[in-house]
Image (cartoon, rainbow over all chains, first blue to last red; front, side, top):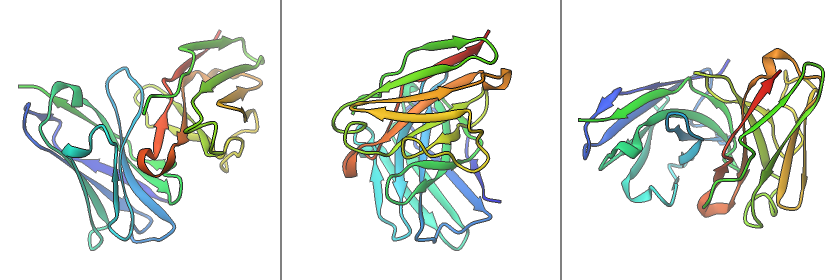
Length: 120
Length: 111
């Protein structure tokens, strides 16, 4: 049974950098059948695709956030990570990691999500 | 890339059907048959209910069905049950640069 678990700080200050990690169990992030990614959801609002990473290390970012994002992977730990820099209150959201369809980036398995609040 | 447009709310009595629309553009819904639908209960992660317009993942009841015409996709929930009350989001592939766009969400209420 595939499981994804997000981890990271619940509270970060404006202008700082957020670091989140997704630990995958029951499947390998090195699989060439899937990609892996991050989706976020501000409180009371809709979903927003953030970033995708492939087994080759190739990354794709939401164009509106691209300049502030970095996604990486650690295959030895079966984890992938997200960094978001220059945080503002608008980055407050539940951040989900997910397994994605390789070709269409469709999320099919999701982590439970982690709430990140940006506040001083 | 703008969000796909969904009605804010929809409702029906138990046993009835409800249909939710999802309107995009020729850059996403209109071009790609990669529309998916997600069900989200409060405080929970979204769950995939429909993919590639009309396909159901294993374990999803056949009361859930999807379709598409032009730039608009639709999700129909037949034989409404109390547990179907949730927020529903559509999503579409949008090409190599934008990748994935999501809908604005529809709150389905079972009366």
